[in-house]
Amino acid sequence: MNLSLILTTGLLALQPTAEPEIQRPSGSTAAPAEDPAPAEDAAPQEAAPAEDAAPQEASPAEDVVAPAEAPAELAPAPAEPEPVAAEPVPLATPARDGERYVVSAGAGGPPFYDEADTAALRARHGIDVEPLERTEGPRWRCLIADPACGRSFEVNALAAYTYRGRQGRVDGMGEDPRWSSGRAQYDFWMNLPVMTEIAGDKLFSRMTLGPKGGLIFSDGGSTWGNLGMAFRYWMGRGRWAPTIEFSSALTFKIGERELKDVGEPKWKMTRGPLGFTADVGIGLGGFGAIVLGGQYDSPLAREEIPDEYRTSAGGAFFIGFRGNILWGGPAAAAVATHAITQRSVDTP
Image 1 (cartoon, helix red, strand yellow):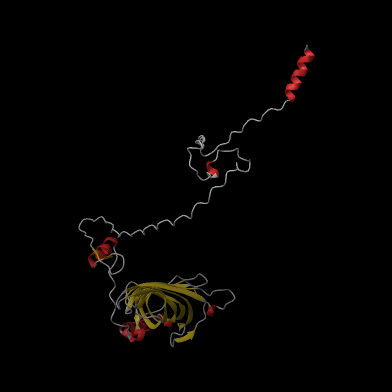
Image 2 (image 1 turned 180 degrees about the horizontal axis):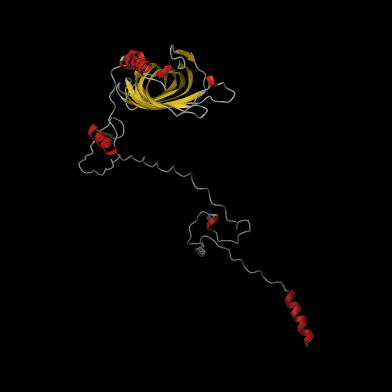
């Protein structure tokens, strides 16, 4: 029984079976062909094209879908219209009390402001108006100091009241003498501009600095030489502009009148170490200045130096007037002080 069932199953498996029809997608379904009309009623017609024939089973090669045709060349996109620049709208500036801003039409440029607006702006920020150009030139070809000069040279004369003092004898005997005297000083200054200022199309000196040297005279035939620097600061551009002056120099004793020979005093050369002098003044243009200063003389009192060559430390304070000799007055005052000091002051 079981053997016959197994044989039957094997025979059925060996029999060929029809392959199932493969379902394939298609764009459209063909309508079924109509039955042909009877031969006697149908007129003779041409053979129908192969397209109208009944659909047959397509071959595998025909089942491949053909690639779609390339799209036609795209037409160029229409050009965008150029943007039109909008006219600039001036910004509204907040007005302050008592001020009005008016924008004037500029020729091919940004907006400009009129003179009234410029004046209001200067007043608000404390800006001076355009400086007036100086019309007059320097005097005496810059032999008198002037801010309109560049490099200049001048000769100044000083006449001053002096309070002198000197240390007592080197051996400690005696008092330290102090006395009133005078001072006459003649100096040569070279002024070199170290700070300048431009006003309009002209150049002015604001500050000058340069070397100076000269001679100093006092009572008893005391004579010193000095060599140093002179400084001047101009506080304006005019001829009579105020000035601040400062000078300092190293001093060295040149000589004095010999006081031991009472019957016939003689002036002799005196050797001495270096000293120092300085002064500060407030002036008016290149005419002159009132100065206040001092001087210190170093001692020469080493043990190996003979007594007749020894000198004591000394100094002086002075106040006077210094000015350019071309004015006449400063030179006359210095000469008069020099003469009175030599004749009327008794040196202790």
